[in-house]
Length: 210
Image 1: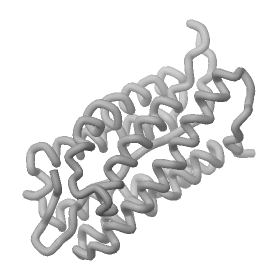
Image 2 (image 1 turned 60 degrees about the vertical axis):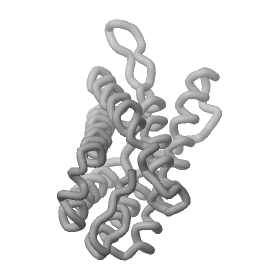
Image 3 (image 1 turned 30 degrees about the vertical axis):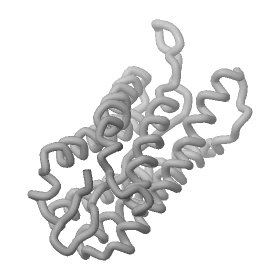
Image 4 (image 1 turned 180 degrees about the vertical axis):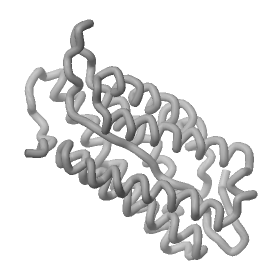
C-alpha cells in the first residue's frame, strides 16, 4: 500500500525504539532484559518501512503486519515489561513507540493517512519528532548505543515531517535512508543485549553512561 497525497510523496514514518540496560532483579527472581525484544521489533519494522520510504521498494504494504504485531504489540509488551522492571525510560520509550506503530497501522489500513492529507500527516510526524527529541536528551543517561539510536531517529522523524509538509520527495527519501541507519543501529543494540546476556559477560560494547 503506498500512501500518496496530492503533489506529495509517500508519507510514512519510522519509529521507534528504545532502551536499555539490563533489568534489575525483582523479588520474584531475575527478569530478562526486554531491551532486546523492543529494539529488535523497532529495528526490523523500521527497516522494512524505510526501504519503502527511500523508494527502493515501491510499496509499503509489506510493513503493515509488522507494524501491528511486531513493532506495535511486541514493543508495547516490552514497555510493560520495563514497567515491571522499574525502568521509567524504557517503559516510556517502548510503550510509546509501540503505540506509534499501532497508530501507523491504523492510518495506513483505514486510509486515514490519505484523509488527513499532507498537513495532517506532517503534524503527526512533527509531534513524534518533538517526543523523540526530549527522549534523546534523557537517552544520554542510558548508554551510547541507545543514545545514537535516538539521535538518528530524531533526524529521521524530522526529515519525514518536513517531507510531508513540503511534498519534496528528496527530503522524504532522505528520511528513509536515515531510517535504515536507525534500524541498523537498533539491531546492533538488540544483538548486544542478546549476545552479552547469553554469554554471561559484556562481549559487545554498549558504552554505558558514566
